[in-house]
Length: 73
Image 1 (cartoon, rainbow, N blue to C red):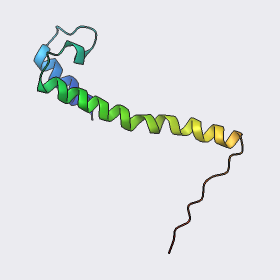
Image 2: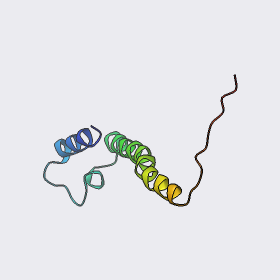
Image 3: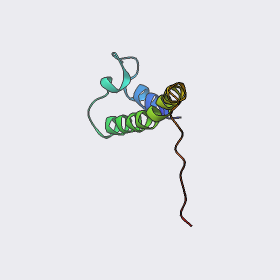
């Protein structure tokens, strides 16, 4: 959902003159800034999802207790 609009807009603007990657091939301007912003949002939101399972695995191996949250009523 995030990559398709970025690449399709870039392809329609540049065509088959793409160099190493789509965003580097784009000229500076609003479209490039939006594409970079969308990619940044994706990377920031994906890092916790990718890092969480290994962290939980190693916490379980080292017998680190799970934190219990006490709600104040």
